[in-house]
Length: 348
Length: 249
Image (tube, rainbow over the protein chains, first blue to last red):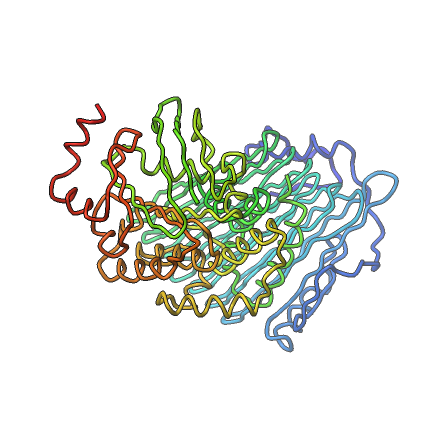
């Protein structure tokens, strides 16, 4: 999955199957230039008590290991990674780097990742996670980037028996935005959940790519992704679940549902199940459509005007994904974030 | 109260109602009975304003106000309430939020102030209790995973809170066992008032044992072919619609 943001030759294009619907080379065109690291980060739109806060400027993950330790030791395993990037006036500012988090057996980490920024920038970040036996990681990701940003966030997650991995990604899109997760599923009681919700408008692009590799017996995976798209926004969802030979007893379910609110908006969904084991339960469901006219009539017949009814139903469509977030504080914070974003969104 | 004149309605270019005339005065409960496909539900949907129900002739007024000149939500604010045969599930919206949003939308349209949260909760708690609805159920998404009886009780709860002037009950008895039927009927009966009218749409006489109508109209092939008192329900139950099918042909 590696490519070098600063070397155009390596940029993936539509000829790469994995990037067919998100052509980075075509989007980027000019090579971003590295910006000297700055510590000047705007105050976040969210406030959250009880989390250890670690700022990540661009993709600079220095100090991450110490931050994880501090969160585990003094903050009940709650860490907030505040990503922030800033553009430059002459051309595109580029950031690229890797970070790594290792959880020992039985450790629990709740990781809140926010991605914000300003101006013209391009970021390519890679996070590597390893979860030892019985470890638990809940990632709640809020991608609140400007419509000028190019943002590719990749991660690999290596699980062990009885480990728990959960990720919920909330996105409002960017000029080009991709969130990509590769999970190696250890089975033997390990559980994985990869959810997502998106609200896209204007000319934004969001690509949610998940790759799941069930290598051993009795692994459980669930995925629920829901989103709303309007204007000329584009969404790509690529979900692949691979069940290797011998990974019997795998139970994997993937669901993606999108509402397209007007003609110009676009959703491309590519769910894939690749199964080489016997005795598995796998399912994927994918629906793309409009708001349910019956539900709309039902709401209006009770007195709601069309705008109110549409807003209510759109909110209702997204909210179940957020309600599944385990951490109470994060659930409330993300709900608040989505409600704030939704205010201007529903009035089509 | 509700006055329907010579109403003709098409759905997808097929004429369903063919010159229906009906008057329900304030304070009265009228029932519409008829065989499958007669146009009973079409009448309810048309009055409420469902989009693909095209009125090609006739009129309908509620307290003198032209219903067809109003949008769906304006009819609700004017006091019309259609209780659905199959109330919709609204995942992600707690029942309380749904009802409060509807109530305040109606009040706003009528130029009244919003009902405060404590006042709304207090009223809701009282009504819910009388309908044997647990407050916890109202915190769950509306109708999601509710039984048939629970869904219909939610419909009655909404009637009681929205206080419409005119109620249309579309097959309210469908999917109800005897106990649920009793609770729902008692809820509806409690809403009978001198300034409120009701139209009960049903297949069977069963519901009319619990909600006794002042008049019964028989709807066959888009028209009312016969009207009578409450005893008509029992006659129909004994003899069926056959004799009226002949009349319509």
